[in-house]
Every structure is written in C-alpha cells, then in structure tokens.
Amino acid sequence: MENLPSILTPDLGLLIWMLAAFLVVFFFLARFGFPVIIKMVDERKRYIDDSLSKAHEAAERLLNIKQEGEALIQEAREQQAKIMKDAATTRDAIIEQAQEKARDEGARIISEAKKQIEVEKQSAIRDIRSQVAELSIQVAEKILREKLSTDKSQMEMIDRLLDNVSKKESKD
Image 1: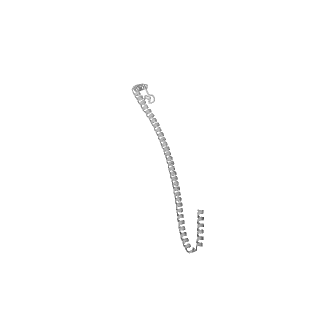
Image 2: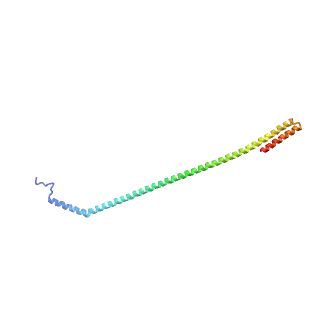
Image 3: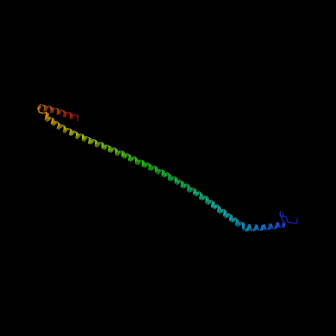
C-alpha cells in the first residue's frame, strides 16, 4: 500500500503543474477578466449609489410635499374657522338689528295705537257729553213746560241753571 499515492499529500510534480495552471489562469483573469469585473462592479456601485441618492431625494421631496400639504390643510382650517367666526358675528349682528328694528316697530305701533285710543276716547266722551246735554235739554224742556207756569218759578230755575253752567266752566 505504500505505492499508492496519498490523497492528503500530493506529488511535487502535480503541485508544480497545478501552480503553473493557476498562475496562467490568474494572469488571464488579471489581464482580461478582473478589469471587466471591477468595471461592472464599479458601474453597479455607481448605479446603486445614484438610485439611493435619488430615493433619498424623492423621500425628502415627498416629506416636503407632505409638510406643505399639512401646512395648506392647517391654513385652510384656520381660514374656515375665521370664515365661520365672521359668519357667526355677521349672523348675530343681523339678528340683533332685526330684533332692534322689531322692538322699535312694536314700540311705534303701540304708541300709535295709544294715541288712536286716546283720540277715539276723547271723541267718544265728546259724543256722550253732547248726547247727555241734548237729552238733558229735552228733559229740562219737558219739565219746564209742565212745572214752570209762573214767572217767579221760571226766574229761580234760570238762576239755578246759570249757576250750574258757571260751575262747570270753572271746573273745565
């Protein structure tokens, strides 16, 4: 068994041929393959770096756009709140004006109604007085015709009537 080649310890000649083959392959790879591979790796690295920087820029732009959008939304909400506040103020002012106008109109109508009532009351009192006066005169005429047959009683009656008239004039 000693003549069999050992798997763990290779022959010196085989080792030299393996080393020569390795150096030839390494020389061709170093001369032709490695520059192409390195160039491709560098291009791939540049492409990845560019893609990453573009992705970062896009993310920053997206963040800026999002912040601008939020700012616009906030501004719109503030404007909406201001418009609502202004509308409420205007509404309250219009309601207050309408109520004030209604109060003034109601007071004017009540005042005119009181004046009209007073005028009608005075007119009714004058009418009643004139009717009472006419009735009194008619009654007095009838009484006078029946009772006053003498000149003396007529004179007394005239004096009393004159006294009553003068008393009424002094009261008015």
